[in-house]
Amino acid sequence: DAGITQSPRHKVTETGTPVTLRCHQTENHRYMYWYRQDPGHGLRLIHYSYGVKDTDKGEVSDGYSVSRSKTEDFLLTLESATSSQTSVYFCAISGTSGYNEQFFGPGTRLTVL
Amino acid sequence: KNQVEQSPQSLIILEGKNCTLQCNYTVSPFSNLRWYKQDTGRGPVSLTIMTFSENTKSNGRYTATLDADTKQSSLHITASQLSDSASYICVVRANYGGSQGNLIFGKGTKLSVKP
Image (cartoon, rainbow over the protein chains, first blue to last red):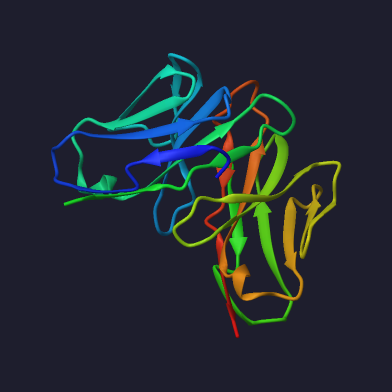
């Protein structure tokens, strides 16, 4: 998985609780991304980062915030989890050369009850 | 609206047979097209990436084609194996300035290879 880890890999939580997912890379890539994957939908971009402390919103950013204080770590926070945020979350990274190919992490399965 | 449509949604084939997956897109301006393989419970893994000037690219038993004029791509799998059972995702990158949030994902084709 191209030097990308996600934690936790599985989480069950209750509606209204805050949740933080972590993505860690060892590739020193500039760009990092958070996606969600749901049945019947393609992967959808939540937020991305183009450098330390530099982030931007994606297609489905409502209800999510991110932070990147170090090159290697990108955190996704659900301030108050809702059942509609039950999903599989993938982190991805990419560099700045060639095709800017994205490499994906193993995913985190989040269930909000 | 930028879209990527894949067909079929699902496909079952016998081990050793060939198959072809389709991808049609309406993304503009076009930068490149990627095919990913996603095993159950895993993240997507890149198979091929093609720009508009490349009309065929192979990766082992996987061959992708691109027709930039008709905005169609296909992924051909030769002599299928049980390990080919996975979802195959077509992804098109739009050429919006310097933004990195510009990949458009298809919903994928779920391939099952049976013995």
